Image (cartoon, rainbow, N blue to C red; front, side, top):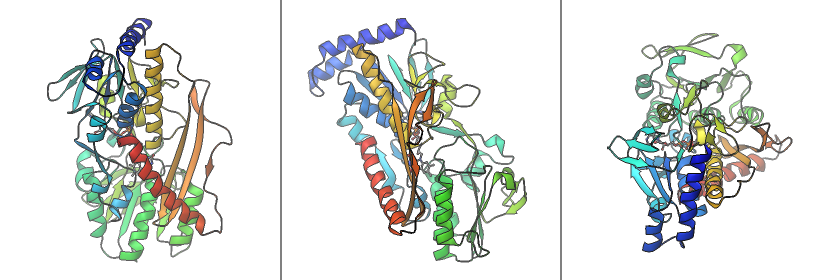
Length: 434
Ligand SMILES: Cc1cc2nc3c(=O)[nH]c(=O)nc-3n(C[C@H](O)[C@H](O)[C@H](O)COP(=O)(O)OP(=O)(O)OC[C@H]3O[C@@H](n4cnc5c(N)ncnc54)[C@H](O)[C@@H]3O)c2cc1C
């Protein structure tokens, strides 16, 4: 951000801070209209948290959230929709509370462009919304081209990725229910970095559990380009205990990158997958493709050659364009995983940075945390927690701060972690949407 635009932003906010008095009421609202305008693009986990916390920390500013869908479906717990423990309705949240309780203008429309010189957002419906500060949280998109034969159309019809909760989640569920007895489910996680690093392994686990009950001769095959994955030690211990992993009767098999697990191509007609170790045929194929920043970030010009959005890690301000913060999965955040928990933390930091700039003080040097629970079975959870700090301009783990679930003989341990997961989701969605 240039000094001039920072000064202009502080001036707008500063004047508003003098004029504004309370959160609610017609006169406060009128004052806010005259104040600086924070516009947030994307009403997913990052964007919705940003809308709410920008209001909490900045009572006087005007806030607009622009989201293409009238309601949001959380990916967290969507693996349980595939196995029938949940419905998409259980995971769907609208913007009414953000609108009414936090006095955010919500526009349901698709953003088609941003003019950074005029500081103006354009939507498909023809709206033009000017901003003083823009917060962009568009999630992810897919590098389909890295797997020959795999396209957006194949994902929607034959080989769903289901990596954005919605219709593909339901397609995967139907395909699982229609699996022939004794059939094979093939799941192919991507290379790092990608959204929700433990997600493919949780999905594989829950599908294996479902098959044990409904289709006992069926198997799950994971083809992975990596040799390690997050929480792999407690995951594999859970697979041993629940699914016979490592024995000749195992219901689940994991082929690592060095065993040739990287997927090269797919043939959706024949339902075959070519990996480095050879050709595989399966009855259900769940390819989770390599990923990149959401298309909107590309359209705005926020992405560099990595396919992700570089940011100043202390403020999550874009290093490509002034007056724009990028948060959530699209942002480069080094050791921090691409998770909802992370997106929520980025959003709170940005709300604070905006507050600091409007008040004319320096923002704090941030630290962050991430905690992630996964299910190996319905009543068997595993977790990872880490604390992160800014070191040498990068987000790095605080040494010895984190932990992965220990493997113990105490059956209460994984049971309790599965309860913590359910409680975490309940409180997390409240923090984001209400
Ligand atoms: C199976 C699975 C399980 C997961 N489980 C967990 C978990 O247990 N814990 C956890 O912390 N994380 C979990 N995650 C990860 C989490 O869902 C993401 O990290 C999080 O959603 C990222 O937030 P975001 O704001 O970056 O993107 P999103 O939440 O995807 O939000 C992006 C929003 O931008 C909107 N948008 C995009 N383009 C436009 C446009 N042009 N105009 C208007 N709107 C637009 C989209 O409609 C969307 O609402 C999981 C993910 C998956 C796939």
